[in-house]
Figure (cartoon, rainbow, N blue to C red):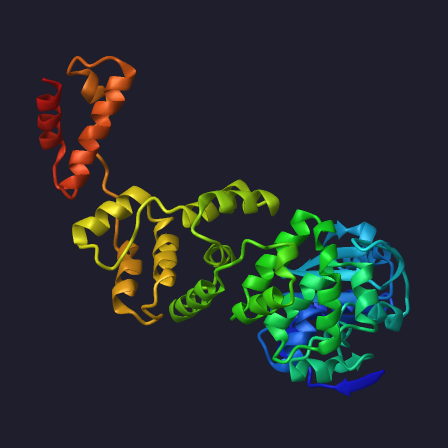
Length: 409
């Protein structure tokens, strides 16, 4: 066990954090920061969530937090996790655990007060770090050196770690995308390659979460290529064949200050709605996610920088402002114009000052002309709207009614 002192940071000493730490300290229990906040503190990244670990059981943790007047949410009591809310900020607090039984999917755990036993069940050395409120950094497996070197390394034997829970295989590549630098750890990579055939045992939900987190990395394409080259993609994402387009999508998004995992997933897939539907079902995407993925993979309109002003406005009206950015970026990434192309940027920004024109007619206007059959009403109304769109939305209600009367007569 290596211990290193670091200067306590503002997020560690803020009033909100201190309220949580003081509440637990009042009960004489041990508590340390763990997880992403520790990793990011070591390498100087901005902190997102603040997670804590404690040697006390969750019931005791809840008792102390409530006594201090803090809101407590029993988010996962069976796994030893509660969430304290201090100043509107959530703090996830988990009791130390050790594995009792593993089956390759999930572990049966028991609570413990042994910090090293808890660290030993972590997947990677950088995830076994813990940080005291006084700035004392506990490092039982060389995680600080690995983190600073950009080396994602398993705690103990990689094959045993993967046999315990094969989700760690996807987590390895996700962490390599976010924290790693080439070359990857040889032992870890060999174990992942050998045990990738176990991936189909995982639930769709767990795969989806890891995949989308991986794709949220600043540049996930090199890791996706690594997974392809090692035969890992074949076992859970064989449809990901367009890695070059993902490269271009990442570059374009970066230039625009964007990052969207679902759009990056679409960029990886062939331009084929059926493939997108099948993958969406396999990953158990939500209805809205499925619709968005399919819309990007099966675009209603072929967008290009050659579209003139009226054509752009017609296309934007037809696909809608919500879908437009996705379709523009997908079309942009399909070509080789580069991330700084002004014409594509202009097309992307078409929605900036755009308000959707309102078609001035309705079904009642058609019926007033003596057309009373439902199908005929709809057909004539759609024809009128198409004429109005073709005229660049300039015709007002009077002109639209006149056109409608001529068609009905």
